[in-house]
Image (cartoon, rainbow, N blue to C red; front, side, top):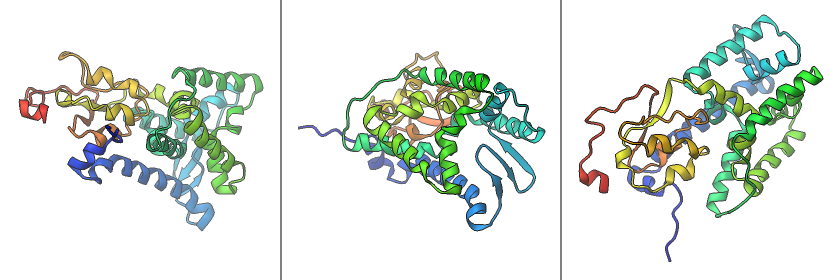
Length: 298
């Protein structure tokens, strides 16, 4: 009987465990470091950043604000302080450059919970579950703005998992534990990658910043692809891969889908090193587009 291997098994054998997890490890380090920066003040009195992930002041100088929160505030009819506007513009410019949903894969603490659920589903071969259209998140995004307009308040922020978790970490977990457990169980048993990849309005908002993002992942060696499907299995948004990986010679090698989070897991798990971080302007040279037959078949 043939035993199905978990995504990345061949990459681990060829590249070693560390290289086959390098981008995952870097993401986790980034996520934990961001949490530590916000918590160092209230927990240990070492104030590098004052505030929370929605609105903060770094080193008493640099204001940073969540543009999604600012947009909700405007829909609610509240004009924010100048520092909040400046902070939101800074964050918007940053995510425009590196990819809007980089926030989801590299900063958001919920990502660690839902990734763990996805890992367990694969590890224990949990199948099935409810299906939500990936456009559902955009309908929910619109609803957060509509409710803000009708109520005159940022209603979504009362239940936003990111806000609840950060509030819980600073003031005591309480309800945050229930939110984290609900997200974990929802993705594990009800809908595979249901929250981050199908429903989260915050992710939908940040994806809109990625339409012209310069930093992108490209299938630079797509001719070497052996159709192992590991990149599809590991990717939280696999629908963004085919245009770049399975395109014609004249089509772009660049993954341009706005819901790609630039997480780098496709780079990690590919034993043929098909994927690489590039810019959206990447064009393969003759040398990078040519492979020996032995390379393609090996």
